[in-house]
Image (cartoon, rainbow, N blue to C red):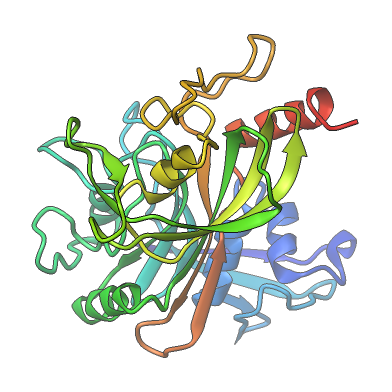
Length: 318
């Protein structure tokens, strides 16, 4: 169901960007959602569709929003919601919160795929039953940007783009250890762990599947670091397994701990984080219809933000 909402640009917002004007006139709307609506052509300024979030507005201009009443709250008490980062007729990009499955593993599981079908109706499944619209996945406890296809043609095109490595993904992580270099490559094949079939293990050269990860240090702390990660392949648990293999295990990762057997916890006085500190921050992909690059940024979630603020205050290098 589509609804219309209108507001006039007040004097205080004159000269502001259009996406920021939403924040002062519609307090319940996030900036990322406003940007998604604007880019999707759902916003008019003085009866003219505007698709640039950075469009400068003037006092007295009339803004019309045509938005569909959907996304993303889920059933009462059903757990975390989705936030819309980008939307058009072919694809949706959402902010997946930690703790939510990308797709259900069994009937009744709450997942991104299921929530979107409740909001948008039937999504294409491709060759994998139960994974409607899903092109790639994030682990349950990894937060960040996730693209979902709304049409069969979009699903096919995006799957091809991922397979041909035309999609760029950037993650952020908080890790234990002090990296020796400011940046480096991890080139280590991955395969199923011989003792734990639900885990991945770094294997010898010539075994397993090729796995490549580029990392850079964003910030250094005493005993920890904030990293930017760019996987060039998309293997299961790749970043977690790769970082543990070079003794930089991710904070609060209970599975991939590295040989040092880190507790992967901060002191009791530090902010709590109840999942591994890994976030998919940027996703760039060719649009399945136009071929133009779509770049979407997912803001750092509150739990990782609080941890980084504490580290800057308490563990910064003198």
